[in-house]
Amino acid sequence: MLKRNGLYSLLIVILFVISACNGPQKVLKSGNNELKYETGVDLYEKGDYNKALQFFDILRAVYRGTEKGEKLTYYSANCYFQMRDYQIASYYYEQYVQMYPRGEHAEESAYLTAYCSYLESPRSTLDQTSTFQALRQLQSFIDMYPKSPKVTEATKLMDDLRYKLEIKSYHIAVLYFKMEDFQAAITSFENLMENYPDTEFKEEVLFSITEAYYSYAEKSIFTKKGERYEKTVEAFNNLKYMYPDSKFLSIAQTYNDNAMKHISN
Image 1 (cartoon, rainbow, N blue to C red):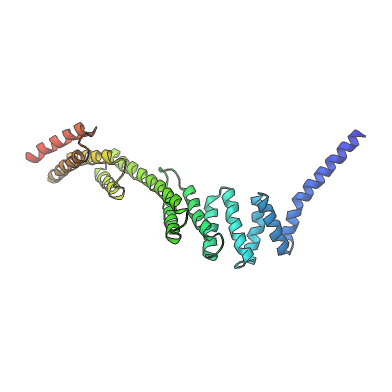
Image 2 (tube, one colour):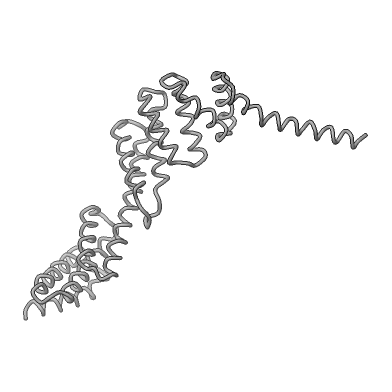
């Protein structure tokens, strides 16, 4: 008797699971769009984002331009966000802003468009296409909603992204130096100073420019040496002026003294 009851209970559980699995699928295949909408929203509210998207993907075109279409676009973006697919989430948040610029979630979606791109931004050693995209989108959000309470946070995110680009620029310049491509290294270091005048690497960059000009002069043909030794002295003076107690000063002084000897000969 107990065994029979156990089998009966197991059968009930199996039938319930099958019914639960087939229920949404039957609705999905039906022609009742209203029922599909209600089912999709119910799945969304229960946190079953993957299944909810199956309904939303069908219904967005059906309800495009309507109140339900607005909700479906916003819900779709949220589903992808919760599933951590930030690239697609950003796409749907941006689509929401474009299609429903006066919508209830327009400001939030404009911010989340950029925030998703921010989350997609990789470490500094990798390609920074997502970083530049996030910067453009964050600036666009600030321009569009200058009084938004999210402006302060958006500005901080932009600072984080710029710092990542700053680090990448510094490492590229250092790499050129290690490869003994001194002209490219000098250009990269100087661009870093121009683009990020308050860089935390300023002292090291000024020293590196001095070192790079001296190394460049040493490897140059005779007719180019004088000009590049003069640049060495100029770079040294910049370092000494900006950082009179620099830890690099003694080494840089040697480059400067040797350059001066070549200039005077």
